[in-house]
Length: 516
Ligand code: F6P
Image 1 (cartoon, rainbow, N blue to C red):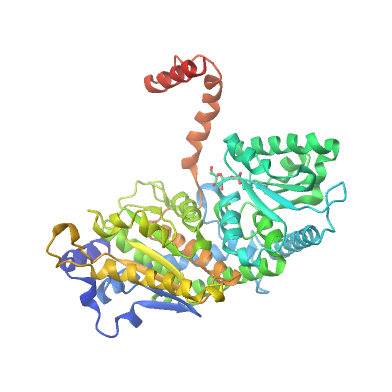
Image 2 (tube, helix red, strand yellow):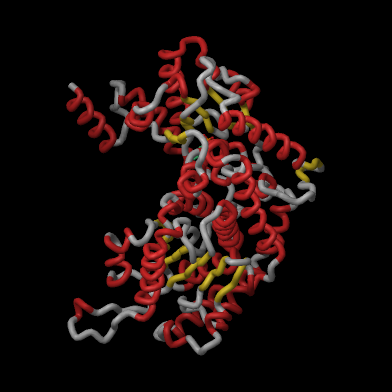
């Protein structure tokens, strides 16, 4: 199938995207879920290519694998786990079975405990041991225990009416220092978020936070902590009161965990009802992904556009460009979601892939990016497929003119990329055009819409991974660096570096000289 796609691409590659429009193209190369529209008419995909891409998805068993995921099959084969973050946002009465057991009663029970806790913090019913209400919440976590809540709290800022929310992730002491500097330990709640509760960055920052709280409240520090983890026993060893521990199962991957306990900081910020709306949005996208025909299925189509650009056209990166300032951290979130999931070099059976897998994902919000890196997107030698996102309506109706300017810029950039200005006399002013982009247009960034957007990208990653035949749900590639860092620490602290490679030994010596 890839050969046919590449042959088709070869025979049509001099054609301009703009010339494909025949009056029906926009409708034929876009798809909707309610107000949400995915337009991929500004790509080189024509009817033949789309047919071949859909055949590819079918022949690679995307539908069967999707159904196996929702049915609780152990599709994360290398870790012998089911993949059921979708159960966390299941708003239906349908059971979700894992190993013959319905997991939904447990999911609902944890969600109920989270809601009661979040509500108690927001209303001041659950206060610091001194009796003062919590004014600030610090979430300590990294990767999937950080990026989702960070992104979501920013995205849903108009709904943020709870305590102030802060995030510490980096092991660099500068991070926790700068966050805690402005806070009062007597009114701060620290949430230690770690699926494994062993991650060195998180545990180190959690110890630092505990010392900071203890220095102010002494042995009452325990009343300032909560934990989110699937390793509940370790949270107890850390000394966190079990009533403030929110657990989840191993069938929730770290980068897919914002929908459950890891989303507690979001829930405290925006309240349980808005959190429920976020879940409902994710669930709506799940239903669509499960039931819409492939040719009208947003995650499938977005996945196939990705396959076209990566595997057929050979473009190694894609830019995600939200014209939505509150989606500032979406590109960073997608970097983990996409690159940790699909940055793989072997297929499920261990054989080496013959097709390129996950592309490099990057991006920044517009319009800011226009004044930074768009020069390269328009006139550089490499083609970079762009994925625009924009709301029809802003959340600031009194600033409608600014929103109009935002949308105008977004649409104009997509147009400029496609049409270009190939005829300019001066070569420096030539815009070659014919550069592909997609547009995700939605009514307004609400909690529900935000949930749909995140779930759309999750399932897109799934579709691409299924087509490559890889396991999108493990992350063995992060292990070596972690192991070597533990071995490196004693050398950084002065140990004998003679067994290290020449470069590392040289760096350790230079470090010592600078520290002498
Ligand atoms: O090192 C990568 C990773 O394992 C991610 O997959 C995960 O989201 C992150 O670290 C944090 O892990 P944990 O939640 O267990 O602290």
